[in-house]
Amino acid sequence: MKDKINEIDKDLLNEVSNLENMEKGAYNIRKNGEGIERKVTDNINIITKTDKPGIDIYVKENTKFEFIHIPVIITESGLNDLVYNDFYIGKNANVIIIAGCGIHNDHHKDSQHDGIHRFFLEEGAKVKYIEKHYGEGQGDGKRILNPVTEVYLKAGSSMEMESSQIKGVDSTIRETKGELLENSNFVISEKIMTHGEQFAKTIFDVQLNGENASTHVTSRSVATDNSKQEFISKIYGNAKSFAHSECDAIIKDNAKVIATPEITANNVEANLIHEAAIGKIAGEQLIKLMTLGLSEKEAEEEIINGFLR
Image (cartoon, rainbow, N blue to C red; front, side, top):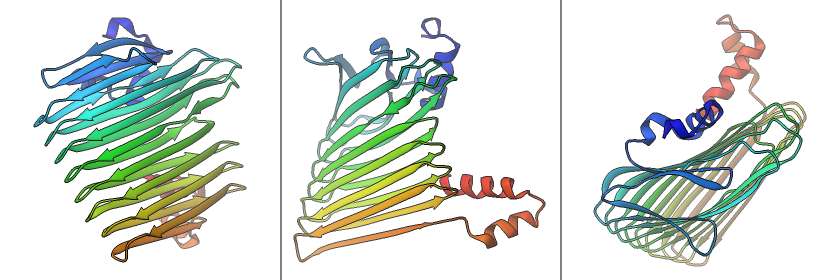
C-alpha cells in the first residue's frame, strides 16, 4: 500500500485513520474520488457499488473484534467528491469501524467531500464507529465536509459513534439519523472546534421506536474568533424508551453558538432529558492554572484541550 501514496497522503491518513493499524484489518482507501487500495478478510467483504459511487461492506454474523478502515483523502483543489457507503452488520457481530476524511488544499478552488454512510445492524450486533475530519493547506480555497450518517438498529443491537472535527475545516453540515427497535442503544459523542470564519452545523434526529430503546447524545464544542456553530437535536420517544441529550460549548472572542433542543414524547413511558450549557472559560479556572506558572494563553489552551479530550 505504501508505494501508492505520497508523504502528503500519509500525513492525512495518519490524522484520520492510523496508517500502521489499518493494515491489520479490512480497509478501503479513497483518494480524489477513486478507490486506490483495498483489503478484505474472511469475515469482512467490501464491494464497489455499480449504480453510484461508493462501497458496500458486509460483516458476517458472529464476527468478533475485527477492524474496518475506510478513510477518504482529497489533495486535488476544486474537487467535489460524493460517496455512498453502506454497512451490513451480521447478527451478533462486534466490530470497530474507523472512517474520516482529510483534505489538503494548497490552491484557490474549494475542495469538498460529502459522505453518506448507512448502517444496518442485525439483532445483537455491536459497532463502534469512529469518524475524524481534518483540513490543511496553504491555499485560500475552502475545505468543506458534509457527512450524513444513518443508523438502523434491530432488536438488541447497539452502536457507539465518536465523531471529531480536528481542525482546518472551513464549513461542515453534519447530519446523523437513527431508528431504534426494542432493546437497542445508540450512543453519540461529538467534538468540534472552529476558529476564524469557520462554520459548523450539527443535526441529530433519533427515533426511539422500540420498547426499551435508548440513546445518549453528547456534543462538546469550542468556537473562537468569528466562527459560528449550530447544534440541533431532535429525539422522538415513540415507545417506552430513554434519551439523554447534552450540548456543552465554550465561546471566545466574537464566536457564536446556537443550541436548539427538541424532545418529543409520543408515549407516556418515554423518558427524555436535554441539557445545554454555553459560556466563556471560567475566570477561576484560568487563575488556578496561571498560579502554576502558565501564561493566560497557555492556561486557555490547557482548558480547551481538556474540555475536548
